[in-house]
Length: 156
Ligand code: FES
Image (cartoon, rainbow, N blue to C red):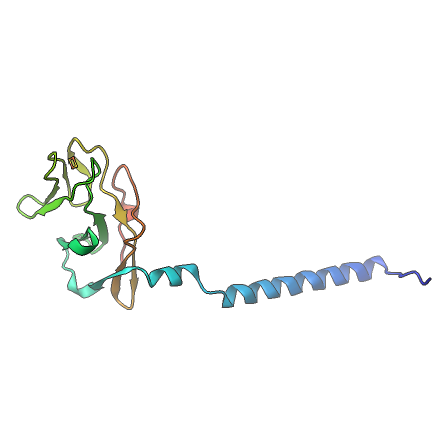
């Protein structure tokens, strides 16, 4: 029986070629694999063209149960209209710029932060992305939070 001889140099050379080949295959796989984010965007709610939303205004989307707040600095924040106390639907009061709950009188500012109890945490928000100058809201994934943070605001 013939014994297979391979010296150390050949072994490392083959090993390096194998690594490079695997890396190349991995890169090709990543390039042609459908991106999860791209697939998910198809399920986002198309709120409208960016230019439609005026700075400093709150826009209700009753059918999707959220408010889209265009901040004065141009950022977008999509707030759930579900009260964080027991889930009633909050209403925007344009006179005092508050979101008010009709059930037990909790109130929230335009960033969703609690102004009046019994609610103890900020309104949930929905991730926002922009595509072809459209505002897309991920209405299937509300984000629970205790307080507002500027990282929750999205800019074009
Ligand atoms: S459900 Fe909104 S305050 Fe109770």
